Structure formats: C-alpha cells, structure tokens
Amino acid sequence: MNKESPQSEPSRVIVAERPDYFLCAFFVVVWLLPISWVGMTKQRVPLVGTYANDMYRVASLFTKRLQGSVDYYFQVQFEDGWEWVNIPKRDYASIIMSGNRTRLDRMLQDSVYSPRGMKQRQLLAEYVKAQYERRNPEHSKIESFRYVVVLFPVGNKLASQKRGWTEWPIETIPEEQQRELSVHFFDGRPGKNSLINSLRSSAEANGPGATEP
Image 1 (cartoon, rainbow, N blue to C red):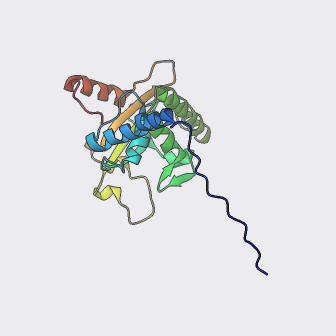
Image 2: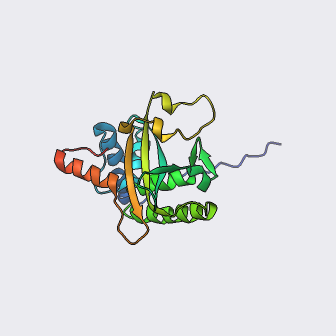
Image 3: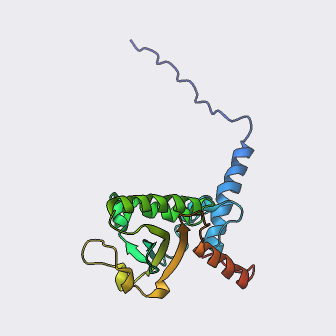
C-alpha cells in the first residue's frame, strides 16, 4: 500500500521592505571613500585624526614604505655638570613588548603627536629622576632631562644586530640620525617641545604644500 508523501511547502523568499540606504551611505562615506583616497593619492585623509588615518593606511595595505626604525634615549644633566649623560632606559622598564621595545618606547611613540605629549613626557621624566636618585644616592641631583629619538634607516648596519637586541651607545650614532624630542626641567620652568616645534617651523617655511613626515 503506497502512502502519499506530503507535499513540500514551496520555499519563500523574504524581501526587505526597503533597502537600508543609511548604512550603505555610511559605509561608502566613512570607509570606502577614505581608503580609496589613501590608496590612490598616498596622502592623509583630512580632519579625521591620526588613529583613523592609521586604520585607513592598514586597510590600503601599507601605502607608505617603512623608512626605518626608531629608538628613544634618556639623557640627563646633573646639578654640577653641563654635559648630557645617557642613562640606560631598560633600568626603568624591564618588560620587553617586542624586539627591543619596552612599554616606555610605546608611551613615547604615542606621545609624539598627542596634544598631551609634553605632559606625559614630563611625568615620565619625573618618574625616572625619582627612581635614578633613589638608586644612586651618592650621585648629584638631576637638573634637567631630555629625550632623544634616533632613526635607524632600513639597511643601516646599526639597524640589524647579530646578537640579542641591545641599546647602541649614542656616541657611535651619527648626529644626522639623532633628533631632540623634548627637554624637561624640575624647577617649574616650561620644557621645550623641540621636535614638534622643528617640524612646525619646517612646515611653515615650506608653505601649505608641505607634506607631513
């Protein structure tokens, strides 16, 4: 005896009542057009800030070639001297995040173009000063503090090390690879935001067509 198989219900296609024009426009304006702009012009998107531009560059598959790597140096002047003396950075940040970079490197990198960068570096300088003087009570007090940023261009022999990562003695690095990031004092005097002021002066001298480094 054959049983009748139940008839299958016809498949139904659910159609949205209306397309979501807002989300489509949002995607085009906020994401598609900006990454297309970065990819084709290799320039920053104006008015959206540094973080958004970093994301657009990543989405555009790194349209700017890496010029090199940077490292930061701590230098101090003591009350009884005038020379800048380099002090080891790793004594104040033992956790290595990647390669030879510590948390302090990341903090300094983030502070370069931050509107609060000078304040952040001042607080870090005060921390290093307090730690140094606590560990070295026989030494003179620190009078001033400065950060030096060093560029190691791609292919430079100092950029690659056969042994484990170490901090190169700054005396062995050519001066043209060194830039003073900022100087800080501990007696109430305002510090000098040296690198940003230098970049701003260069941009003003080159006119509105100057590109950001």
